[in-house]
Structures are given as C-alpha cells and as structure tokens.
Image (cartoon, rainbow, N blue to C red):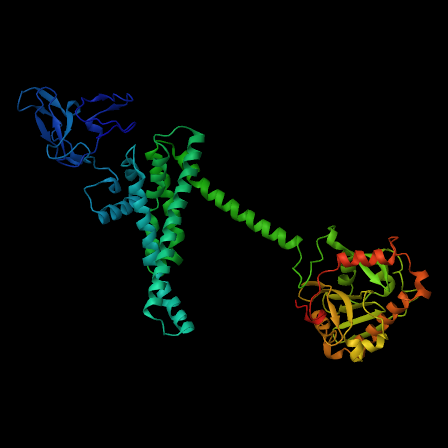
Length: 531
C-alpha cells in the first residue's frame, strides 16, 4: 500500500496526510484484494479482515471485540497479513504485469485484457516508481506473438513453396539449420526494433507532457503507459488475417487505450494526454509527406540518368551549356533551347532554326549556305551536313544530335576509312546526344573505328523510327563528307578561314579544351552505348 501521489509506503500509519508529500489518504478510498490486509483497531491493534466489495469491512463501523471501543474503517491502521511481506501487492487495481504472484502467461493475458477493456483501471495500477523491465517483457511477448502467430503462417503458405520451387527440394539438414538461424535472427531483430520504437514514442510523449505542464511520474512511467497501451495490437496475432485486416483497427484501439492509461497514470487532463500521444503520429505523417515531396521534386527537376555520360542537366545549370565542334570550329550550344525546339516541333527544324537555337548565328566552318542532305522514313526524319547530323522522331519529343570530332585521324584518304584495311585501324571520334521516345536522356563521346561502327539504326529506333527505312549509304556518306571536311579544314591552304573559333581561341586551344570536356570513351560507339 503506497501513496498514489509519491509512492511512499503507507503501512502501519494512521489515516491522514502522507508523511512525504502531505497528500491525504484513507483506507476507504483504496481497493484491496479481499482478505489480503489487516484493518487494525487504532486503540488496541486488534486485526480484522475485509471480505466485502473491494476488500472493505462489512459493516464499516462497529465496536471492537477486544477493547469495546467504537471504531470506523476510516480510522483503522492498515497492515499486511502476517504471512505476507510489505512488498506483496494487496490493492485490487495493481497492473497484472507488476504482480509477482501471477505466472508469466497470466500476467500477459490479464494485462492484454485490461488494456483492451479497462485501460483506466490498468493506469491506476502502475506503481509510481515502476520498473521498465516488466512492461518491456510484455511488449516483447506481444511483438513476438504478432510475428510468429500472425506472420509465420503466411510465410509457410506462400514463401516456403515458392522457395522450394526455386531451389528444389534438395536442402540438406545444415542448410535447413542455417535458414532457421537466419529467421530466428530476423525475428529477434524485429522484436528489438519494436522495443526501440516504443521507447522512442514514449520519450516523445513524455517530452510533450513536460512542455505542457507537470506529471506525476518520470519518463519510465510514460514509457510504461506506451507499452501497456499496445495491448489491442494482439489482434495482429490472428493468423493470416491479423497482419492484413486487423492491424489498422488495432492501432486505433491502442492509441485510445494509451491516452486513457496515460491520463490516469500521470495525472494529466484528457486533452494533454491526447495531444502528447498523437504527436508521434503527426511527426510520422509529416516525415512521410516530406519524403514524398522530396522524391517528387527530385523527379521533376532531375532528368533521367543517361547511359554512358552525364545528363543534359536542369535548366540554367552548367551541364545545359555545351560546345559543338564543326569542321574544327567551336560554337556554344544551349542544349536546353535545342531540346525545346526539337521537342516542340512535329517536323524537323532546318539548319537556320538550329543555328538560331545554338547561339544566334551561323555555325562556324559550314559556309554561308551549307547544303542539307535530308533523309526520312517511317516515324523519323533527319538531315546532315559535314560534321553534324540531326534526327527527329515524328510521334514524340524524341531527337538525336551527332557530331564528328575534328581530332579524328584522317592522315589518309577519308574514303578509305570505310573500305580499306589500312584505314580500319584508324579512329573516328564522335559525340552524340539523344532523348528517346521513352523520355530517357543519353549522351556519350566514344571513340569508334571502322570495324565496330555499324549504323544509325539504334538511334533511329530510339527516337521512335523504323530502322529498316534508313538507307545504308546515309551513315557512310555523312562520315565520308565529315572526314573530308576535317581534312580540308586541317590543310594549310584553308587554315586562314578557321584559325580563330567563336570564343577567340586557336585550334590547338580549342582541341585541348574539347579534350578536357569530352566524356570518357565508350567501347562500341553510339550503337552500343545502351539506354
């Protein structure tokens, strides 16, 4: 028998104020187990045992059989039975998990029943100086029950047959033992995580309570309330149905039970208890919404990752600006503008529009009126000039841009690159950028040779076209014309017209700059870059 305010022992004391905190106490306000305490006469110490409701005396007032003085139950000194110790629980509303006279399973099931049906009574039975170990034991058994009884049948019905079909029914005894150990380890980890989670929830609840006022007990008492309020979660132990159908109503039931237990155990109002218990739920919902917003924002601002190179980059980023090299000259290309142009047009823009998007002027090295070579097929169209090719899908905002790097080896006849064995050992440096009809951005700067360069078929398919309609001479003609233009641009007689690029750099400086900016070579060329 202890003070409900400070947990001070009240055995052998006359009714009145608590010696520790001054809180008034009386045997009449207590609920005892019948026959478990002695009501002693305040005059002669004659003992009487209560067998009435809540263990009280019947009648409550009478004459003492020993000294004859008139006594009332409210005047009696309360002492434990001779065969009981002072720590033996005698009050009827003690929480079952704190009652050492009960067995482990009785303590568990009675606590579950009180949590579901009489949460306020359960809260009154939590000692002020309660220990965490009994309530942690209750929560651990509850979590293990949900895992074993509720979830294990699902695994046995679905997981085991699926596993056996995949691995064959040839498992040896050691392999079975390893699986058992693994599952036991996962189960133990799940129980530990459940205890850690309920401890965190209890700490948050207690923090909110302390910010809004005083409490009767410390953080251990609040954690005890959180553990005992989880009794309705036993519904999750119903085989198969529990984890799927009953967890949500059980969780709501548990929140209500925790609020009622907390308001009584910590001596706080229902409003304070409700706000403190719901705070962890609000925090969890806020984190979930924040993650969704972050994922959505990342998905909107960051394009799909390319295969074999960096992405085009968001609008305004350095990656959105790139340099295009045509016939040994460099021009700054705003690929965001090019992307908008190609994606917004059902038909392929001509060179003039492309130049305007590329930076507002003629592309250096192409001459004042370059001749476009057009080609088309089912689902695509395109054109090329020496050093540059553009493909456009007709039914989607897909496109592909290819450029030939002037550092390609053209020391021999450019046409031999496509035919002779001597030419096949030399390298052609190319860069390509593509947005497929599936919205995937790809770019790469591979070094390819004659024997592994196949065709533009993969890029045509990527933009949604039919590669069968692509004439075989299109890539060969473009490469031959590009190599011829490179050779011509690198010859001494033409050097005067291209000595200085658009940014004022010399060809050597431009070459070094492009070498630094060019992505790492990808073996297999554009057709093997993959997307």
